[in-house]
Length: 256
Image 1 (cartoon, one colour):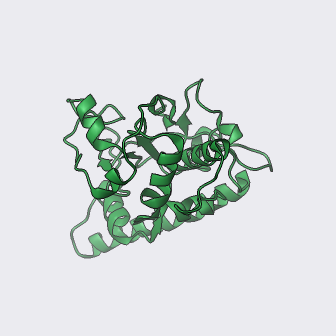
Image 2 (image 1 turned 60 degrees about the vertical axis):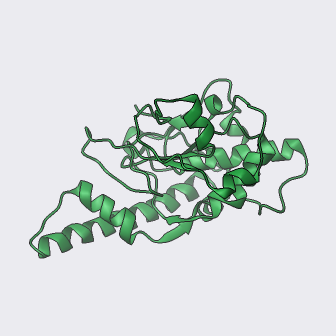
């Protein structure tokens, strides 16, 4: 598994999450009192991240509205509002402390400092559970192919709502990818940072194959490396899989 770093230098914004710096974007979210789907109805531009990070979904991808979360739109807005308020207060403290020490910093640096050093700890699994998305343990995956598919895409769209995007998934069938997510990626300790225009995150789950296919080592966001494509024992645990065409169907940041 490789982590890919991206900066939005033009916007003067910065953030850090799970080892990623990145550019901000939008996510779709559902309205009404029913269960919220990860990427459907738009919120107002001023509140683009109120219900999560806005994403672009290819027309032939599994439809996001078929993979709802277990929380209502209002519940998710309240969840992210609380986390965003906590983050803004933390960033303000960093700015105030720097001024008090006679070494003022700009918001770009304060964001990085808070996100990397002071944000509370969590896991992606816990973040998904807060959205009402059930994440099975690695030894209790769904039995049928249809249930595996439904569970996997519910998680993929839930991660997109959190501003987290996968790449390098074509070497894994649905069950193998779900197993890898549940066994390793989703249970690693991370900093709990709400989706915002400061950052997005890409996780390459098959870094070796991605490197071979693209010698220029471009990130999925179109930005150039160098990136860390080192392998680890966990990547070999799930074995070689037939190449699929899933990556092009995955949600990606909405840059508008």
